[in-house]
Length: 161
Picture 1 (cartoon, rainbow, N blue to C red):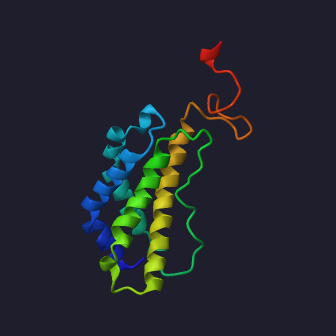
Picture 2: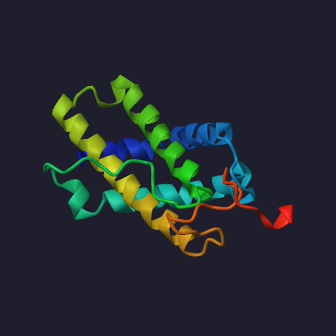
């Protein structure tokens, strides 16, 4: 990870947070816990976690790595409010840091690409930890073989009796 990326993340934090909130508010709300008014309070903590993750040695070395896992994290029921939270976080980071070409004009394409992979990997790791933690206490958990009731299946729900 190029040092300028960490610096850009820190200096662009306010704009990044604003864009992230805009994107999050535009998302469809999947559950009461996914209300943007509640999730915005986690943003500063998440950005701090991302900065800390990026400061770890594995993200500061330039080396070939497989592409990140992506923003689509695993959640069996699909109701985890952090799914859209982290998907919009990744989109906001890319828009704020990479759409504006003047931010990293001094870097070559290889360094930009490598730093983007590092950034996505770090954000994916933060997202994985938080999404997995939320899923661990989810009351809508089902196995992959047993679809979530009420999610488009023909199985009766408690209210249909």
